[in-house]
Image: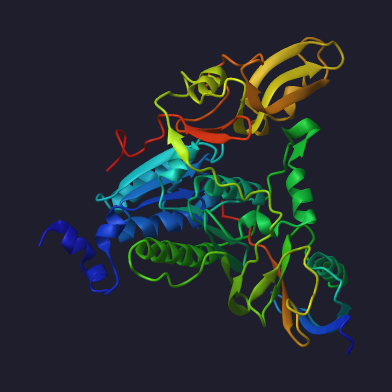
Length: 87
Length: 387
């Protein structure tokens, strides 16, 4: 595998969607969210973040999938932000 | 054995527990909805001595499935007031104060500065962004709690350094947030979104929030803080079960990292203080007073040219302000500033007239200098405490 691409496992928080994917390291967390929400028809209108479960670290939206942030075969999760207080 | 020992006997069996420390603690709960109810109940039960409850909303019948402190007879009453009354009933040892109003415009920064920790139990990203900036300015740690139907999160932010809530904002989140505003920053009309949620998830997240507050309050002494570190998030799902603690990276370009210090207290109240007086007091008569928010100064009609002086925080003003009473059209545009100087038309207008609350802090900008002055009246621990 070239260093320009990374292979990792991606899943949604409810575990209904999982995939092993290969992407360029220049892709950002925000790009990943955009692609995943489209591909997996995730709930429109929610705010999502990407978290690397293998490194216990959330990615900033503009951060690319560089080697220090995402290693080959890491598990990433697309998590909806919980933004309600229950009224 | 006195009554306090009776009440807290079980706590004292915990080797690291310091009931006296909790008795002197000051905790603000912002948002008295489902999470806030559970947080307030827990803080009262464990004997946190000084509680401030902030909420602008009133009790609705649909709140009763999730809000342990509310009853049907409370329908229409201010949530903050009802929650404060019930907290004082649960534990008469503690002092509780309710502030019915907006967390940003009705609560002075001086009130936030007086707190050991602030717990945000809010219903929107917008409210969290506002609380995050206030706590950062005040240099006070805050806990964020949030829920959806079966997910919950708790994050802990240092008021002075590290990642903050705003660091993780994406372009999409800013877009969504900005949809709340239209036409030069006036508040857009919003559909009332009803969210699916239950008492179960609210009580779980509230338990973690209060545990974190406990650990933080105890860590102010010699105890090493366990649980979350600053700039960490606990994320859990209930269906299926998942639990994780994650680091939140700092965004070095985040605009919310602006701690206002040192803050100097002044004797002048919001009713007395004017921009000119504050600039003179600071020895910066050629400088500017930064309010910390956008002030709607005027509405100007592009049809007939009529002008109305407003002087209110821009975010508090909705689209109804676009209506011109002179030509009866929706043609008025807002004019807003976030600073005032001694040469401008509002130099001698009181800060109370501009909507600043008791204990507000303003920034005085001189030539290459910045000073922060806190108006009087923000001390909630004097007269007026219940309990």
